[in-house]
Image (tube, rainbow, N blue to C red; front, top):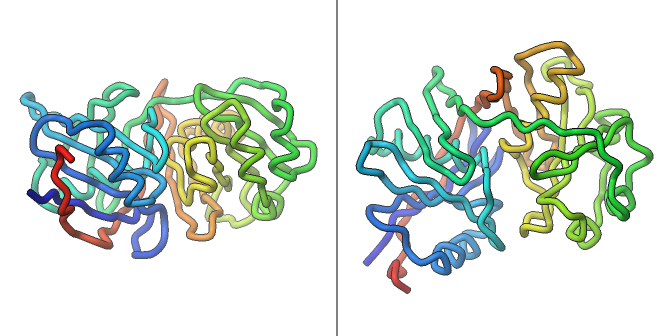
Length: 268
């Protein structure tokens, strides 16, 4: 028994950039969670997505880091939609049933647009150890949403200069920490980086779910609904965002880099 699996670079239009995600399309029932977690660990990407068709024509979708299942992931959803369309398995409009509700994906020219929940952050004092673990000065603003802490620093240069202590950040009571600032490059409105060692990801290259928070935050600050963010990781990636009520539309491209088959029985 073999199982198809893909490696896709998301939020980029060229290989070896953006954020790589594993995509594992399944034909039937969910395999054991331990097997999915083992596959995600073997893939060793920030997330590996597991997707299966439903009788109603929609899809069920789950995401695993190398260490844990997570509630929301943008780049692996983008990668999954890309694979389903590239292989001819799905129609142009996609509906995914997830731990964060129903998420949709649609084509927008060469890009893909995801409809995700808006995840605003409320002002909150950083917990003990967070700023020390980031190695940042006193932030301009700090807050927290359902998943993560959000820290605004003074400049794009300060975002790029962050050299966090992963062990220290892993003790922060949250999925991860978003660091952001206004963009210096006029092509973008804001820049960010995302660190989530608590779930096995020291730094995520491009984080769609973090932009569900960033879109709300910068939309309020800039008085705009549509913006472009750049995630300033080593690989880098562009996320176009649009706030629409209690939803955020995330736009980006994807490229398949590896197509293969797992030679591991699903029951194993």
